[in-house]
Amino acid sequence: MRKTVDFKLYREAQGVACHCGLNAELETCCLPLIQGHVHAATCESLMRARYTAFVVGAWDYLSATWHPATRPKTMTRDSETQWLGLRVIATHQGLAQDKTGTVEFIARSKTGGSAHRLHEVSRFVREQGLWFYLDGDLKPQRPR
Image 1 (cartoon, rainbow, N blue to C red):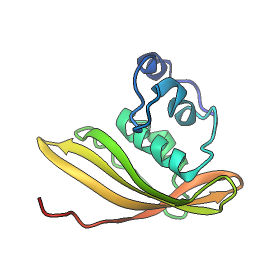
Image 2: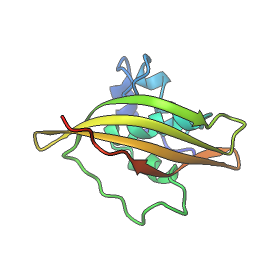
Image 3: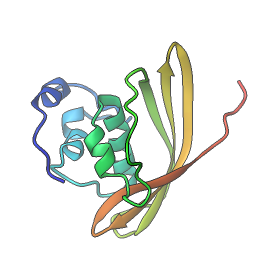
Image 4: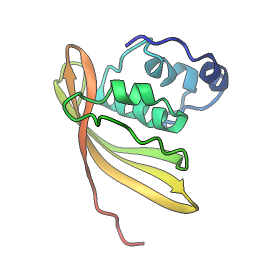
């Protein structure tokens, strides 16, 4: 999955906080995964990199890390959505020695002036040493 370096994205990443919610810079956190220089060691690190890929519009990475059995034929590129933040609630299994794992998270976004919360439990599988997003279950929204 090694890709040509997107120099524009790299320049923009220098000194910028990573979007994944960890206290790290993009160029040393999720960018190396998105650019294919390294692979996610855990399902949580893949989920964080995929969230960051949504923020920066790295559609090739999103497609490459979606399991072929559940990956859609086409992906809708929603340029109107502004991703505002990610909070990981829980991770079960999904370590380097595991074959499966789940990550529960809340991703906040804004579309057309309206705020949204995506609360999901995502499932991941590891095949031939690589983690893939398989699918997820949405959690119901709590009334405000």
